[in-house]
Length: 426
Image (cartoon, rainbow, N blue to C red; front, side, top):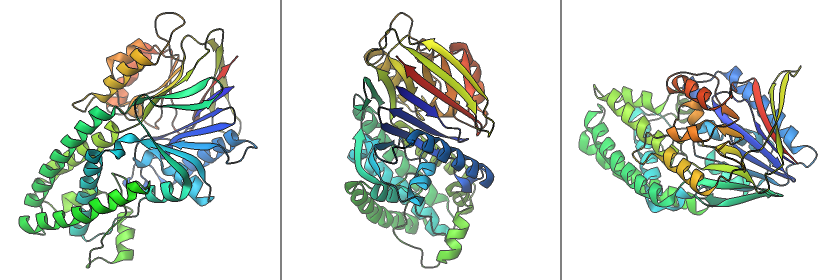
């Protein structure tokens, strides 16, 4: 029997797959606490839900056989699992990350992002907080494996995970463009910031880039990744008070510091910075389909339940019409010039999905980028249920709700209350 639970964690994602004694956790995080996107109360609710459903999935088997797939290095995709494992001093048998980080171009892009952030922190006189990612992969994971398009992970029985993104050749070229964009952004920042001369700023960035590049390469060689949004400090500003700096950093975003250290061009630089960092992380994400080999004459149970002491549940049973039980699209979007969401879906439709009858009808789709991502190719999937893992709908996600409702009879926004569970039955 196969089960997949989308845990209600608010603005983030946490998926737990259970099959033949194997537990595969996908991501499991909630938005940055310090950014104001989620209150401390909400963070605690997300932690409680994570602990509840992980404990339920583990049952009496303990922590043995647990695997963890980190789709990309955004805090809302790893923070809760990190908290859960580190606090309990637990070891994960295998961690999976994107194979993009094995390519020099993508590593260089990561080094540029980290170095630029370090420069902003240093000029502002604030120390960045230490990221959890190096500790996670070094201390929590017994083994770390990289995933690329076409790779498979056996979950047990006739169920396996098929990776539909990243396509390494395309992502590598895109990472090269990211480096070029970041180089121009650093020049613009150094021309605009008010606390250092342009020449002094550029020289300082080059010095920072040198040791950050060395640090990132060393970290990756030891299977310790640096986060593109938060990083471990490699050098402290001499004028900064370490304790005061860390306290301030808890409530100070990089974008805020950019505005404080630049003039009238600050808003433009912040917008470009956010675009580059977000699109880089999203383009290098791991997206996958969970497929079952023998899908004829089988059915699935769909359960939607509230995370309350008195659980309310809706239970539906329906036949399986394709080999795809779950399609997880991470934070893929078409905002990149390479349209990564379209390319991932094209690969899926051409190489992964098998049908009992036309048209395609997958069992469950996790909406890309918490509902903010959309592709016309999603219309071909006709999912029985679409899950939007978020606690609010605004902007593109609000616009896309109508689109998801047009292709799926059931659309669920999980928030902190609604868990969605799908089980494959014989």
